[in-house]
Length: 181
Length: 187
Image (cartoon, rainbow over all chains, first blue to last red; front, side, top):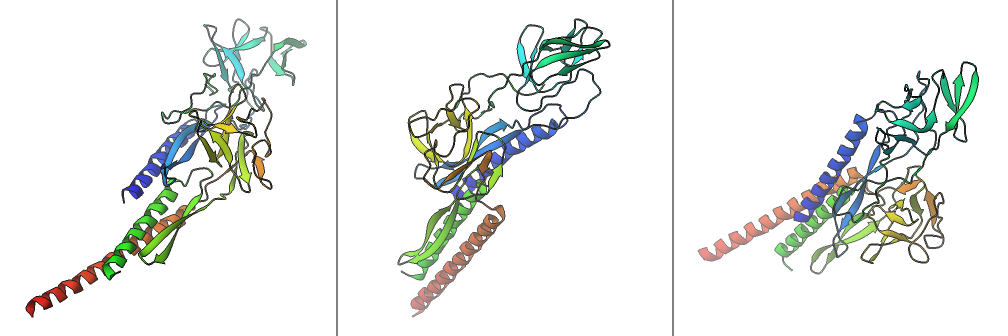
């Protein structure tokens, strides 16, 4: 009877992890650019090939396209398709985000709420808004007309996976965290 | 074999059924899990349980280009860091920077000639995975588990009842024997 108990317990433990992941997704449901995670499971098999229950392998970020929402910010950007905004903090460290809520700082850079600046773009003080073309060129909309102002490169990565379980013999190379702020 | 032996074998069989149903229930979220079916049959030594596997879960759309579901027979061949070869039908893969595909347990996915390497942006097809002829691959899908939680719960209850009735039969046989022993003593 122990085996049945263990299998049932393993299923409960795995579903508990699933609940944690779902709760995290729900908690971030209102976060702009947030990518939810999905838990993955594998069968536990004894050396003889007999099943012993299940194990949660860890959650993996699902990079499905979110809906674009029209916003009032003149410097708000959104990415349709793969890629991230490359942003730089005060110490020059790079980070990547899908959250495109930027505003113009005094020095002409576009900065997000955490004061990271969008790499490669500077806009003059008179700018009304920015337009990004298909090829990544940024055009600033001035009261007098449009003006080119740098290029926006959207780096793209293969989906990083998050494996937290010590029993999973996988150590992904350090990759930029692809979560939105 | 006597009645006690039969009842005991029925109890063992009921326990095995319960174990199998729990195992299936535990894997109700495991991708590509093949349901284990418990089939009871009579032998000269009581009731025996045979396990048969039933795969073929429904495909689930993920939209991720490195998620693969096999339509038809066959499985992906994988090799762990210790060199052991295994198979899996759970096709949720990740691509390393050198192009190697790995499954979520970190095992390298094998193609026709050793570890499969996929250039960035490319999607391998059924031939690359060395699947048997007639099998297809669907990118952007995963094979779901072939388990239905409700019917497994019913199996758990049925196994419990089966265990109980065998136990009652055992108690009845025991009581009869006890009575006949008493009768023998009185004489």
